[in-house]
Image 1 (spheres, rainbow, N blue to C red):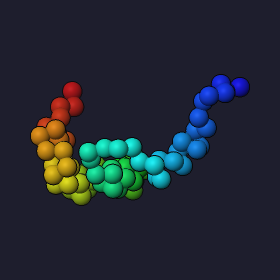
Image 2 (image 1 turned 90 degrees about the horizontal axis):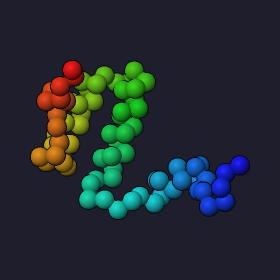
Image 3 (image 1 turned 180 degrees about the horizontal axis):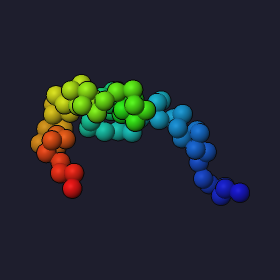
Length: 75
């Protein structure tokens, strides 16, 4: 039995679309990239194509905080 003050997880998920948290970042870009990332995970979109689609947008949005995939070491 869940504690009385815990939020219903389904209500929390439903509220994400209608009640975005305040952020300095583009919420629409986050949603779009998130949907594309699901397609990568499902094998419907290649990782390379994902970065072709979003690389410039990520650079513009995150500036110096953005690290392109080729700069990440996969050791």
